Every structure is written in C-alpha cells, then in structure tokens.
Length: 265
Image (cartoon, rainbow, N blue to C red; front, side, top):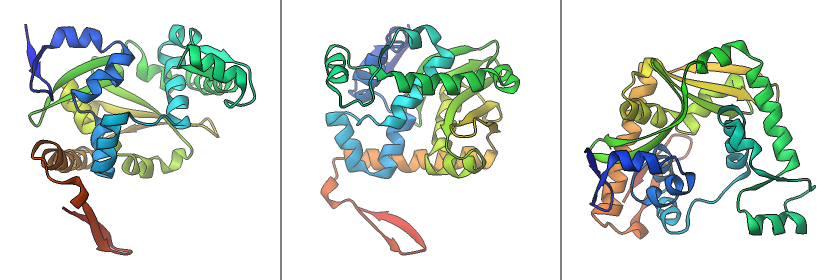
C-alpha cells in the first residue's frame, strides 16, 4: 500500500486518494488545501497574498472558468454535460436563475449550453483533433511528489504515449503568447513529471472561440525547462511564506519600468 505525505504532514493511501479525486468537490475543495497544483503555483507566482486568500476563502469563479468547464465536459464527459441544470433566462441576475442556483450551485444558462455545444461540435468535426484523443482515457487524476512536494493533477486526455490538454482561446495564432502569459509551461513540467511522460508527448489542443479554428501545439525542451524554473521559483515562495512563516505584509515587487520586474521580500 503506497502512501504519500500531504501538506498537513499526514500520510495518505494513494489508491484511496485517487478514487476520491474523481469527485470534483473533493478534488477542488479539501484536496486543494492538502496538495499543490499547477493552478496554485501560477497563483503563487502572481501573488502569494492572492494564494493565501484562495486557501482561506476559495478561488473566485469566473465566466472563463465556467465556459472552460462546460467545453471540457461537453467533449470528454457528455453524460455529465447533459446532466447539468440549464435555465432558459436572459441573465444570471434573474429570479429564476437565483432560485435554481440556491438549489444547485452548479447551474448554467441555456446560452452557456449552446455556446459550449457550438465549440464541442467544431472540435468533434475536426479529424486531427479526434485522432489526437482517440484510444485514450479522459479526466485522469494523479497525485505524486515533485521536488519533494505533493502535487495533484487531472489529465484531460491520457494515452499510452501522450498527454493532451484542451484549451480555448480568443486568438489561435497568438497561442504561444497565451501559453507564456497563463503559465502553461508550469502545467507541462508538472504533468510530465506526475504522469511520467516526456515533454515530447505533451500536447495542447486549442480551439479559437471566435473562428473555431483548431491548433495542435507540442512542447519544446525550452518550454519544459522554463516551466521547471517557474516551479522552483513558486516553491521558493511557498516555503518562505507558508512553511518558514515569513511575513506576507513585507512581500514587495520592485523593478525598472519598461524593463523587468523582480521580487523582494
């Protein structure tokens, strides 16, 4: 029975954790405080104060996150998608929507459903996209140590010789810029280590929400090692403020305008 030590310094059975990680409420709730993830590291790099706030109060939901979840579910878990509650209203501020949300926190508008179906339809009509995810498992959880710290992950698509992560974008031709801006290199590094894959086997499958164009992007060695550098930097921040107990009020950024920004603490 393989065990893993989580952030509360207690040991847990990995097999049991993997079963529980299939439940989104556990994965994004309790386990969020017990194991790090690519998302939590990206938040740390953005601001350790924001990371602390997310631990105490949870990460705020956004329309982008709602849309992304529906898009993923429509393609990878269509039964789950169809089981969601959809309300035919013009706005989420209506009484009908609020009443539905009071009974079920995960409720969506009919427009959100149609938007997700539009994207999923474009995806599933593209032979290159379908081939990339064929003969694979979907929404596969994993938990393991990276740089002596516990990390959780869910692979959108896991095949024998590949990991595929689905993304939406508003500019498919500028996806390389988005990959840097949103820290996709961090995700690449962590997922390759957690799932035991080479960076050569990691792909981003992106869909432009406007044009519906699809892009398949593999990861370079430079991209992978840039992710490693960011992971090291984020863990330095985590150790300093959340293990060693340095005062977050003294965290400060400094730098030259139009040049670069660096941290001091």
